[in-house]
Length: 381
Length: 210
Image (cartoon, rainbow over all chains, first blue to last red; front, side):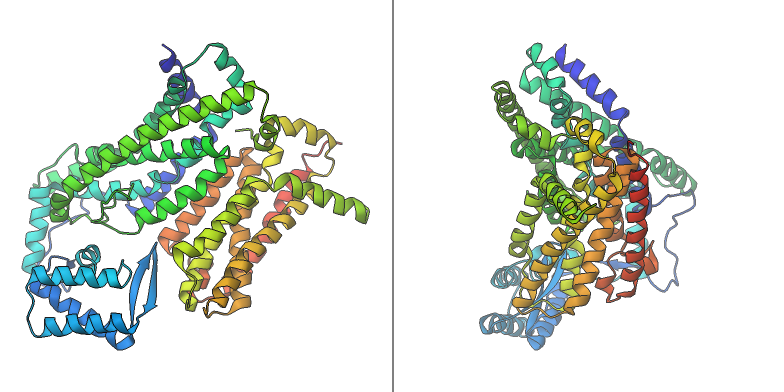
C-alpha cells in the first residue's frame, strides 16, 4: 500500500544519504565521549577506608533547611543571588524587598519556628519573588543541595543500586540521558529538509499524479525517519548491555537484559518523534529548513538545562544525568510517563499540521505561485 | 577585474545569498536579549553569551552562503558562467564576515549600553573569530561532501562537542576560550581560518570550467 511504499523509499534514501551517516557518526562520538566504554571489571563495591564516597542529595528536612540558611546568609551579605537562565548562572542584584524577604526567612529558620512544610512554601515564594530558577526553588534544592556520603551509606547505596535497581537499569538511564541530548537536536538536520527535497527535485509532480493523501505522504516519511533513528539509538544499547552482563555475572549481581533497551525506547523515541515532527513542521510552515534550527536550539537549551528531576511539560528531553538516582527515578516515574505521552501526542499533532501545510503549498504551486521561491530555496541534498 | 565589476559582483552575490538565513539570524539576535538579559553582565557572563550564543547565527549565515551553488536549478545557470569560483567564494566570505560583525557588534554594543562590563575589542574580535571558524568548518564540510546539510551538521557537532566537554579534548585550543578568560587561542584560530579559506579557495578554483 502507499504508506509502505513511501516508507520504504524514504528509508532507502536515508540509508544512502551522507547526512544520515554523519548523524550516526556524531551520535557515536558523543555517546562514547560522554558515557564511555564500559568493560568487564570496571565497577566494584565501595571499600572501607576510601577517602571519598561521593555525595548524596538525600538530605533530611533539617539538613535541607540548614543548608538553605547558608545560601541565605551568603546572598544577603553580597546582596545578590544566582539565577539559572538557560544554561547560564547569572548573578542578579537584589532590591530591598528581596533582601528583606531573605532576612525574614533566615530569622525564622534560625529561631526554629518553621516546620518543613512551611519552609518549603516560603522558599518557593522567595524563589518566585526573585524571579524563579534560584536555589530556593524546589527543583534546585532537590537537585543541588548535597553532603558527602559515609562509607556505610555508600556501601548501602551501591548495594541498592546493584541489587534493587539493577546496574543495567541505572546505567541505562544515564546512557539514555546522554543519547537524549543528541536526539533532541541533530535529527532536525534530517527532518527539516525531508519534505523540501521532493519539491526541489520535482518528485512532487510524480507523486501528485498518483493522488497521494497528504497524511500518508508526510506520515510515511516521518515514520521512516523515526524508525531508522530509533534503530540507530537501539544499537547503542548493545555494547553496554554486553559489558554490564559481564560485570554483573562476575560480581554476582542481578542483570536486567532489557535495562538499556527500555530506556532508549521509552525516553528517546518520544524525543525523536517530537524533534523530527517539529523540524518538519517548522520547515514546511516557514518554507525554510533553516528556520527550524534556531527554534530547536532554544527549545534544546531549555530542555537540557537541568541535569535531572525536572520533567515538566516544557522539557522534551528526559534528563537523568546520574547512575545513582534510583529514588529520584521512583518518584519521577509518573511525571516522566505523562511527559512522554504528551510529546508523542504533540508529535502527532505536528505531523498533522505539516500534512495540512504541505497540501496547501502544493496547491499553491499548482496555481503557479511561488515559482521564484523555488529557486531561492533549492538545495541539492 | 575592474573596480566596477568587483563591486557589481559583490552586490549581486549579496543579493542572492541574503535570504532567510539573514532574516533568521537577525530575528534571533533581536529576541535573544529577552530570553537571556543583557543588563549588567560581568565579563564571564558576557563571554558565555558571546561565545555560546552569538556565534550560532554565524554557522547558519556562513554555511548557507554556499547554498546557492548547490541548488538544483541554479547550479547549471551559475556554473556555466562561473569561471572564478574561488573569488566568488571570497566575496561570500566577506559578506558573511560583515553580517556576523553586525550581529555580534550590535549585540555586544547593546550589552555595554545596558551597563555590562567586559573588554569590548577583545570580546568583539574573539567572538568574531569563533563564529568565523565554525562557519568555515560548515562551508568546508559542505564543499567536501557536496551536501550543505552535512556542512551544518559538522559545524553544529563541533560546537556541541566543545560545549559539552568544556575544552577537555581540545585543551589549549578550546573554541570558547573567552569564557576561561584566555585570548591567545583566538590567534591560532585566526590562522586556522586563513588556512580553511585558502583550502576552500583552491578547492573551488579547481572546479572552474574554462
